[in-house]
Length: 187
Length: 187
Image 1 (cartoon, rainbow over the protein chains, first blue to last red):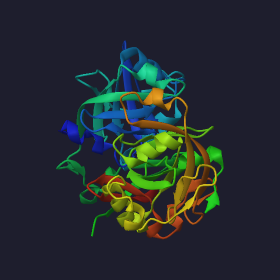
Image 2: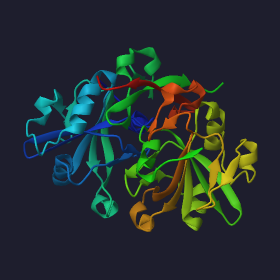
Image 3: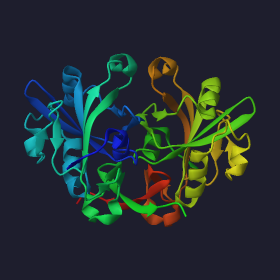
Image 4: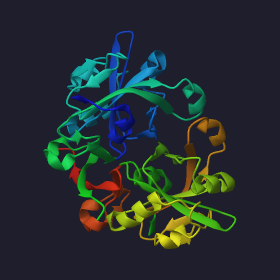
C-alpha cells in the first residue's frame, strides 16, 4: 500500500464504492460492510458513513471515537458479503469466520483490512453525537490514507490498468454487486 | 419512467452514482452535478447529499425546502460535466447552455431531468439546518421516485440487460467518470 496525500483522500470513495468499516475498542475488533459512505469535505478530508446503532461496529466506534474505511475489491466479494451479513454481536469470532486479516492502524488502532485497494484511518468529528440526531450518520475526519498503487496512482483511480479482480464493488441489493466499469473520459 | 416503490428508492443510489441535484424557487430553476450523495435510511427513504453553500443550488434548496436527485447515464456524460462545471449564479441561462431539459416535479416543483435513468423528488428534513452545522450536508426525505424500466426492474438495477449508454456514471476526478460495470453475483 502507498500513502495517499490527504487532499486526494476523498477520491478513494468519490466514485461510490461499498466500504468495509473497521472498529476497535478495549481489545475487541470488528469489520462490517457499508454501502452508505461518501466524502464530506476535501481538505481537511472528511467522510460521512451510515452505521446502524444496533451494530457492534457502532458500539466500538462510539466508545473509541475512531474507525477505518477500507475499499474492498472484486477478489473480496465473498468476504464483503460475509462481513455484511454476519453480526459481531452474535459471533465474537466473526473476523476469523469471515476470513478477515488486518493490520492495526498506527493512528487509531482500528483494523486496516488486508487485500483492500484503499484504507483510511478516521477520527469521529466532535459534533457527531449532535449531528447524527435521530439518524445513524457518522461524520469523521480522515487522518491518513493508503491505496494499492496497482489501481490508484497520481492521485486517482486507474482501474483500467490493472486486473479486473482489483476493481471496486458497488452494492445493488442482496449481495449482488457491480464492479466499477469502463472509463468515460472527456472528448 | 416508471414509479419506484418508496422502500426501494434507496437502491437508486445505493451503488454510488454521481447525481444531478435539481432545485427551483420563485421561478428560478437550476441543476448541478454532485458526486457526494448516498442513502441515509430505507423506509421512510432518506438521502444525504453535500451541496456547497456557495452554489445557486444551495440557495434555491434553502429557500424552497425541496430538491430533486436525478441519476444521469453514460449518454449524458457531457451534460453532467457541463452542469458540474458551470455556475447558475454566473449564468442565469445555465440550463439552456448545458442542454438540460426537464419536467417539473408534481410534489416539489423541482426539475426532473429528462434522459436520466432515475429521478427522485425530495423534501429537506426539518433538522437539516441543525444537522449541517459547519458542513454542507443536506438530509432529505424521498417523496417519490421513478426509474427507467430498461435498467431498473423488479426493485433493482439491471444494467446488464440494456445498452451501455444507459449505465450510471461514477466520478473519479476532473470530469473523468467510470461507468458502472460487470455483475458480481453470489456463487
